[in-house]
Image (tube, rainbow over all chains, first blue to last red; front, side):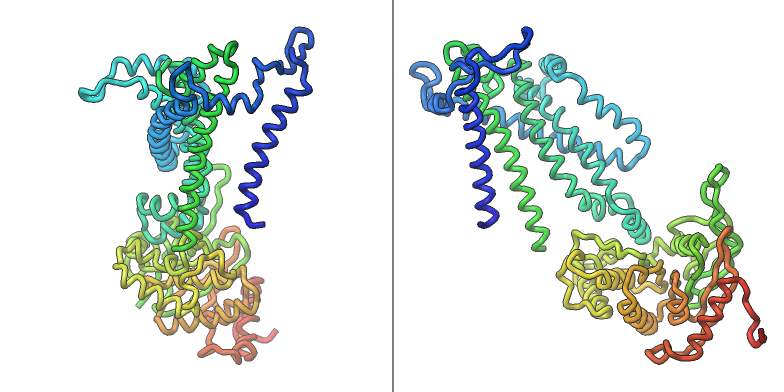
Length: 285
Length: 261
């Protein structure tokens, strides 16, 4: 079988295995879960906690509220709204990360001084940071254009996305062998020429894994950002809204979660596709 | 006309610290234009250091290095030399052709001239048919030839080579030696060549510079006069005499020419 066939089959197989695990546990697991000394070790399996897969899927086709748009459309629109923050946050975060990596590579002292803060930035709980960013944003405006809540979400996505790019690209920029650097020196090549002709091309194997991480981080950042700043319109908000209906309409919250996961997959696929294009061009050139 | 002049050059690494190392001391050496000079000696004798000093990749602690009549730093800025190392050090994301074009690109040479020059150099090393290949698709010997083509691409008056054939098998090595001599002769390039191999040093050189370690210094310069090299040279008595001379010099029990033991 060819490679593509195996890939499709593998992806389908993973979905089937996931569904089988879900339904299998739901069939054999205790309805009230299992608690040992007051701590729950197995989740509950009743329809409120774990709706059937078919119930969730069919919920996509039903209206959100009686008479409204079908859920799939609502979730899709919410995903597209969030995608704007994800895409902008990813691009801006990627650029900031690249800039930091270049600065840190250029000046050892900047690496020593900056890297701890770069790492520290990721250990601050996002939940604590999000309201602060939203609060600052409320007092800003871009020219005459007032600050929008989704911009705060973008900043949060960016805040998470820059990190893997900064760390990965620093590694990539430092990856050329000493002999290659010596060669560039023998050509009397300046810092910029060495960056463009040697360091950047040499760092592409590090770039794409970093971009994948950054894309995933941007999605998480946007969804969590929407939740913790209470921004309306995105899929993060949808998760919160629907979870309030969990007792009466348990399948609903899962539609929003599947939407958020699909958003992450779509963004990851986009990165994978661009990597495919770059690699193919390189082989052809 | 001299190509390289070193005057009382020394190099100390980590000066003033506990791990201070005197890599070279009291080095005086002159390389004439078109001359082929080999540096040979045990590991740690500073031959690679000496080559890097000439290439201005490191700076001497004392003394002066003059290349093509200018200070080494100016010569490097003017790309007065081409350099090849033990590893080919090709850029894997560039085709063979674009690897050879690299030094020309950095010089700002036009696209058409770059392409023509790279083609010419690849023909010279016998790789004209591989211009569109990537380094990973070539054997070690072919990669090394690409590296030599790259070093020659700017038509440098001086070629610096640090054990460029060290990682190759004996047959490839001998063929590349002949190619290198042919190229140097046809382009009038001066060469400083670092090697571990005594036969290689004798076969290639006009003069073999014998060095010793701790501290790195030049102990003897052995002139070699074998005339034009060819297959027969490797079997000739003169070749073996040269090898014996260099070997003795390396052991440090040099016997004056004509003396009986």
